[in-house]
Amino acid sequence: MKIIQTENYQSMSKLASQHVINTIKQLNKPVLGLATGSTPEGLYQHLIKAYRMHQISFANVSTFNLDEYVGLHKEDKNSYHYYMQKFLFNHVDIPYKNIHLPNGIAKDLSVECTSYEDRIQQAGGIHIQVLGIGRNGHIGFNEPGTSFESQTHVVDLDESTRNANARFFDSIDEVPNQAITMGIQSIMRAKEILLLVSGSEKAEALEKLVNGNVSEEFPASILQTHQNVKIIADKAALQDI
Ligand code: GLP
Image 1: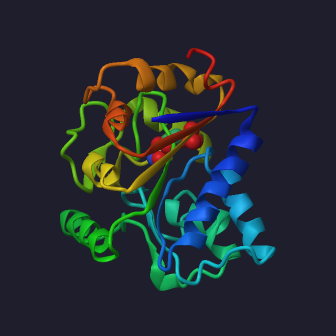
Image 2: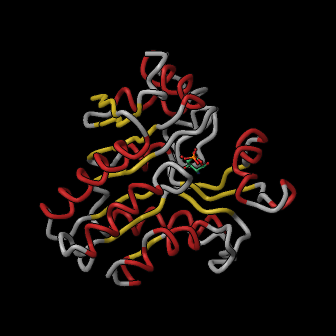
């Protein structure tokens, strides 16, 4: 794992964007794995800026998001579909057909999980997977205890994760209890992983990810075994290392 320290959130986001921009420029049909949460918002702003300045086009880009809440419609302002439209897709030239997120209101969720995995494979796999990390070490919505062999699947969300994400909802009761997430193995198949970490509240998790045992009890620890991981983290997040 290569760890790159930046001064703050802004410089983390900028550096991450340069990395993603290079990937988009280098490949004919780039496939990006994308994440939600507060952490990648700055990255997406920089990508929009690069598009507006004609540095990149998303016309040939395909995207696969890590996860989606079960039970939320695409138009629900708390769905990850909505988040992605708002923070990136509405502002760039990506064709709608190239955008992929799990469908959280699919009639048969297990069919949806299998077909999502198939769609990733059909696109040729993910070139660069953007990741954030939860304080309990979750990646995507793979909570502690998730099998390292897991593919896209339905998860019951930890109470701690629901609490952490409650800030986006009107009340904790509105936070769904389940989500569809790419599995650990689906994430690990990406050719490159770009993990973004910002802020002192993530310092303990980052320390455990870098120095702890590789264990299903701390899902992000699996990244130690991936051949091509870059961690871009700010000073505050790296304070325990
Ligand atoms: C959510 C998402 C994760 C994300 C995590 C951290 O649970 N499913 O993909 O990495 O939150 O979010 P934040 O960046 O807001 O701290």
